[in-house]
Image (cartoon, rainbow, N blue to C red; front, side, top):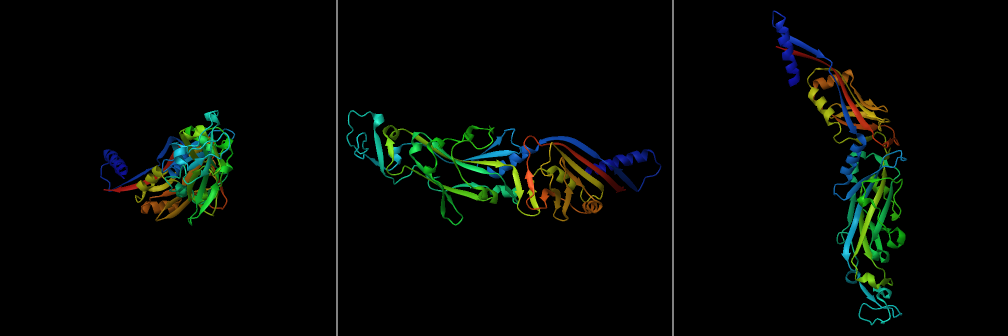
Length: 400
């Protein structure tokens, strides 16, 4: 509004310089057109959005998959379930004894034949009353996916793959690590039993130290688990771990006094290919269009807008082209605009302009997919917003 009055003042001064009388009213018209480079990487924006939705506790690491053979963007989520460091078997793992066979000794003071070398000695676990680790001293560990509902409540990811990796120092191959999912009703479901993971697969995923990944699938090792429904429902994955050495397990002497480490992690392969689960599915943008919203707010109620269009250009591909770009105002409702392969486009008709001229207008923005099972696929690479263009026709009368 201040700009309009400044423009009016300049126009009045010019008028007085060339006229003999003072006018009672000045009509100001114009068609301002603005076009500026944005250079905003839309894929980076989406990555930051998912990071905010999934990493509220700081425990989730998001890695970008860079393999050029993948057509669509893939993010890898790595979450540590538990880590136990610097523990000893003798102190933490129940009791041990000798079975009485040559080459075995007892932790309780049974004599060891002099001819045996320390590396030949073994103990046998005869009871197991304690565990090495229970998550957070027995409390469940919660992996929350409900932040995704803020943006993609009406969609499901397709092609999700998940693995549990369990690894550590020498003792890890003697351990059984049971991983339970606690259901909503409080019952426990065993989803990983340590015996199910072969020794050669008790290795780290490697994502703890990675920023990028060039593979086309999750690394070798670990055990696959199906948590797709939990991710897509935006629910919580509640896990409880029990780590122990089973009875009748032979333990080498040199492992008893060593300090050991055990780690469990879950890794999720998350392609950016989504399918709508309902008609009129909505993909929300949290703050991406704030600047455009400010333009509408500043012009609403002024009566000066005759026409307006805004175009946001994306190269090489607009991932939302199969949907409708919607402007929603609490007072007016929805204004729907078709999308194409390279842009978001807003073009207001006469009725919409009249409403904005007479009323406050504070819009939010989202993409609407009218048909169920519509696909939203984020192309791999840099989908860049290159320019934002504003074209408007304004007319304003100032009375004196």
